[in-house]
Image (tube, rainbow, N blue to C red; front, top):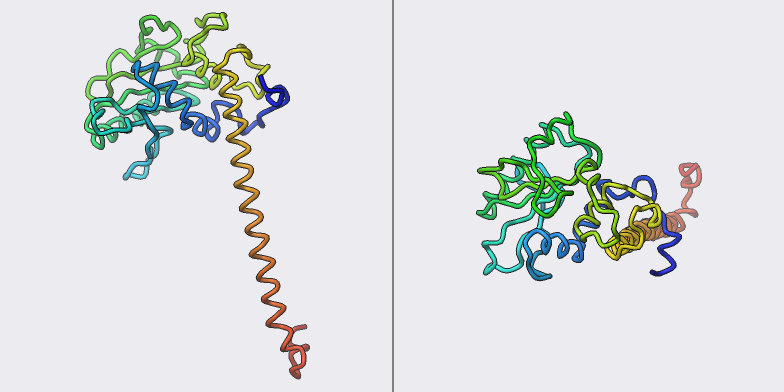
Length: 248
């Protein structure tokens, strides 16, 4: 492990599970491959990200689609990171899936990371454990809107294995749901996937910081240039009678 991760700490608004950092992480190539290969058992590089903004003005969190037209039978993968999963959210999710189906002519696979709770808690009865993945639930009926709809929440992760060899998708889920600001505050700091995710978080924030600084620098240059132009306009007027009084 690189020593810079030992001292790296995410700010409160940058924690895993928060909107901005979650989208940056989930759109990275490594995580696209991680999720797609787990859900569909396919080769890396098969999926890429697509715009999750819809014509009706609504917007999902993250959308993956297959790269090549020849792979058209592969379903889109719609991902939502949601604080509270309730009936209103599920209704929105159903609408998103219908839009995806209309665009890509196939029902999507849906993956929901619930970072806080289900409300009411009895909503979990609409889901059932996934075979060989007790830490993941799938909705019992998603006919006419999704191929499958998977849920990972704090209640499902409470079944997780304490072993360091947990599968990558489970590791990703713990990263998003535990919301630890530091690598060593996480329950699996030595897991390679967890280390990769904190590395991605660090790099994403650094790139974002560089962009923000670049914008500040551009604004400074524009202001400086405008100030120089103003002085150039003012200088010839200093000897014109009455201009000094007007300037004051």
